[in-house]
Structure formats: C-alpha cells, structure tokens
Image: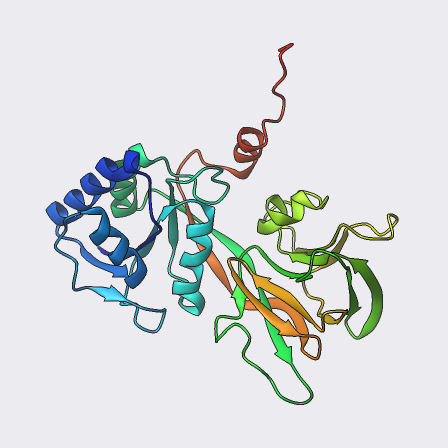
Length: 297
C-alpha cells in the first residue's frame, strides 16, 4: 500500500503514538511519502523512521498514493486537501487536534485504521470544494498561487480594526447585495460548522448542494445569511477606506488592494474523505456541538 502523510507540529503527549505509528509503517513495509513541512516537524521532534528521503512539496510531486493520512486537527486536513487537489487521493483524518469535525479517527485507532484501509473496510465521503478566481483590470493575478480551491470557505475581511468594508455581491451576474460589514464568508456545506457557524450561519448537511453567504458583523442587522445553490456563480468587489482588504481560502490568507475582484464557484473536482464504519455526520454534530447535553438529563 502506498501512503502519503501530512501533519503539523504536535504536543509532546502525542509523540509516543506518532513514533509507534511510523514503527508500524516500517514493519509493514509500506511505501511512504511525507510532506516537506511535516518531515521537518518529525526531525525536530526526534521521530525516527526510514522514510526521510521520500518527501514531496506539492501535489505535482505526490507519488501514486492509495491514501493520504492527515495527522492533526481539521486545519491539518484542510492543508492536506491542497496536497491532493484534482488527483482526489482519499484522505483519512487522524485527530491529534481539538474539535475534529473532519479528522474523526482517534489516535489510538491508527493500527486499526491501517488494517481497515488494507482490507477495504471503509467508505468514501466526497465533499464539494469552492473555487476562487481573481481579476484586476483585465489581468488575472494569481492571489492563491495556483491553489485556488478550498474545502471550508472563502472569506473577505477588513484589515483595519476601526472601519467596515463594503462587499458588493452578484449572483449569476445579477446584483445580490452590498454588505456593509467586517467581511463576508462564502462557505461550502463542510465549512458550515466552521467560521460560517461562528458568524451566525446555519449548519448544512454535507451533500446538500449549497453554498452559504454569511456576513461578518453586518451594519444592517436585517441582512441575514443566505443559502444558494452551488451551481451559481458569485462575483464580489470591495470598497475599503484603507484601499485594501484580506482574503482567505481555508488556512491561506492574503492582503489585496480593492481593485482586485473575485469570482467564486464550485470546483470541478472534490475532496474525497475516508470514513470508517460507524462514523457519520449526525453523530459528529451531536458530539462536537454538545447537542442534547443538559444537567437535567
């Protein structure tokens, strides 16, 4: 089995589990390739393994992996999607982080996970990605350096703490609204439990075929989050007193000037997540959001 692995810096408490995991991979003689940033994390943490020379920098360098294992939290899995891209290599998220909406495999089940992957005892959970193009007076600046897709959301926000920005939004070429706000979140169903939820957006089922448009701290309180069909195309321009604003695509952010315009639509490919038996979205919702927990019951 060919495995790609990505991760982030981890707590000392996770060191033993990660070392045991790499010992298991070596014993099973799997072909393993590790992302360059995570290889450096492993080196600094003193994790020994025989795969130090097998690294890759981006999805173009990724070998013919059967799976990519994401060792971390949800942020790590979002980064893992960028290492896979249009190749749609299935991603299994192991939760060494905190919340774990996406990375749902417990660290203590790493060996069981390898057995399940080897035996085909899993299912695929394909998630829609958001695609973002940028435009500036006829030019097409590559704001996100060729990685212009994300699993959770595309966000626009102000860069100063003192003044709002105005986001002019158009849906399929028709004027939607001018949002006087701290910013705007354009979220996939997967991202509905992330930043979008914190600004008052709804929780949306993962395969509902929608995007959510949710303003951050809108000046007009009657402007509410809007759910749209993901077949639509959103276009946005921004006015800002500082003449610039911040955009973010999942974990990657940039500051751009207000002459840059953005177009947002559904990506042509998906993020293929691995789901273990017994793992489902509704159970995750109840567990992570503490639904139904009350001192009275």
